[in-house]
Length: 193
Image (cartoon, rainbow, N blue to C red; front, side, top):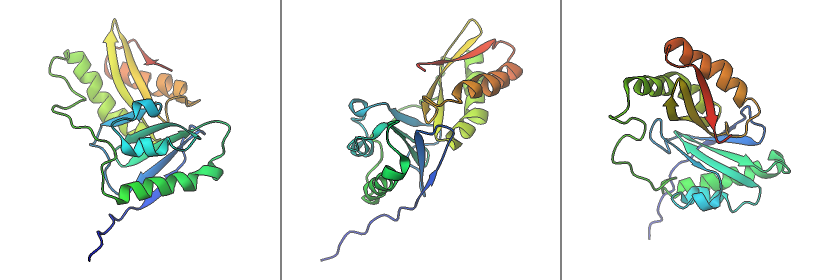
């Protein structure tokens, strides 16, 4: 009888500006480009068996899945040295089964809406092209929330959620870029921080 072969999974870890988050990078895509899934707790992880498995660790506070990585945020009273190998092994063994990290299908592009105003389309385009890749590099994501009266509101996810340097990144980086490229933008604020 032949045994099913495991999918080859190669993982490496990357630190990021948030000392409570660690990025576990995989050798293949877990989500479509530009799409991310933020699980702030176990109750929100019903469509991700991988996130549910990670929440079995008492030290895990948040799970974020995007592109080719999983960012895990730990509780502050636990050290990475005591849990990172266990979390890495859990991610690796789950992905070796070949099951998807997230069980979600989109019928339309979740990032763009044809009913958006021209300004909102431009804002989303700038966020997607210039800002998303840099934020993903740090294990997080930035998602457009709204634009009203010159104020762009965004959601910070993954390692960016609760990161001590996220306010500086938001104001010094993202706000300056958007204001420089679109005169309609007066400020950028994060929702839910």
